[in-house]
Amino acid sequence: MDMILPLAKTGAISSSMNLWLALPIGFIFGFALFHAGFTDSRRIAWAFYFKDVGVPVVMFSAIATGMLGLWGMSLIGVIDISLVYMLPTYLLPMAIGGLIFGLGMVIGGYCPGTAAASIATGKVDAMVFIVGFLIGSMVFADFFPVWGDFYNSDYMGAFRLDQWLGIGLGPTVLIIVLIAVGGTLTMRFVQNKVWPSTEEDPQKDRITKMQGALIAVAVVIGIVFAFFPTESFIDDSVEVPYYIIEKTTVSQAVSDTLPLVTVAASGNDA
Amino acid sequence: MKFADRWPPVPAGILIGISMLLAFAVAGRGIGASGAMTRFVAWVQHGLFPIATEQSVYFGKYFADGAHPLNDYVSFLVAGLLVGSFVAAWLAGELRVEVLRGPRSSVAYRLVLALGGGVLAGFSARLARGCTSGQGLVGGAELSVGAWVFLMCIFAGGWMGAWFVRKQWI
Image (cartoon, rainbow over all chains, first blue to last red; front, side, top):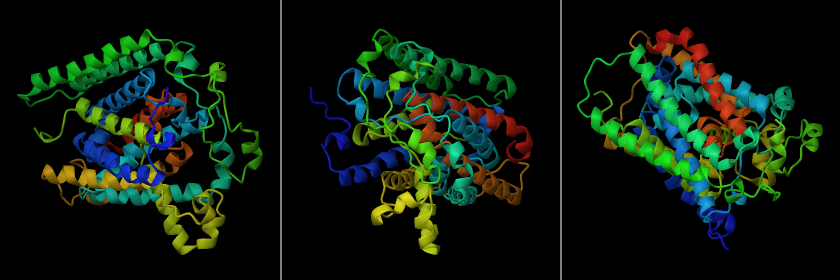
């Protein structure tokens, strides 16, 4: 069976066409970031005080959509999942990076994508944040030998949650959907407890029904996925040469020991 | 309602997810923003110190074989992102030059913290090989263990720091 997706990797479109098509994809991304309220640093920061939990709800919705869509396209056989770049896991650097990143977000009020989107709407604090972000990136790059070994440590390949849990991919997708729904409801509950709303929104019922219907669709798709074995989504027995490991010259000894191609199925021994 | 022109979070998140799906289907990779920032800073530094930047262990790869650091997928993506956000804000009548901050925060306090937070986020996005979108959302959809750990640590770090900067926001 000839699968045509992803277009750029099956040769359906040229690499320069792929670059040009990134413009409309970025346009949709930026358009959605504005309507998510992510161009307002206060709304992003308020998530950490439970004053406005829109940020995690948007993130749950985006992840659920991407997850159901990606694995769904693989399930029905329109995308060759072995050609999709799977992000590799470097556990400890990502954990430490996440902690510092979260601090940066609550202090700075943005992350890079939201700050870029906010700059386009004229917000000065976003411009200053990006200046800081560029400085931070430059410090990391120019002093790379200092933390290069740590950066490349704790490598686990493209290691998925279902492999870590030792269960099927389909049930894992359902669990994530349920966590997203549960997390959304919990955060809403906490927000209403800590910051009770003073103003009545006349559209509240309509919005709640609409969002509830969208969430119900996601849960139904997740339940359907749970009945399929992992092999229906991805063939873990095939060695995939698309796990791109960032090379480093400073810690060549480290990267030489890292396998450039990893069999994802070997990751069960977490 | 103050943000009446904004969408409710679920449909807004779904549209972000759709942009991610389009990138999967067209390019075979996800969306992201921090990569473009790194390439931009490499380009600026190359303008000032060309030889040192090309020999840099981290930036050097962007200049291999005479390549231009900005000629990459992530740069086009961010260019589209800027236009998309601009158009959305323009249609909503929210294009405004201002400093967003909480009611108890001065402009100077807000901008100093914006700079400091940016430095922390810029450094740690490189350490974690991506930011909220490129590592968190895309990796989350791909069920990557590292991405989910990254996401949970973002919220842990944010909650740890929230008390110290509360005057900035609430």
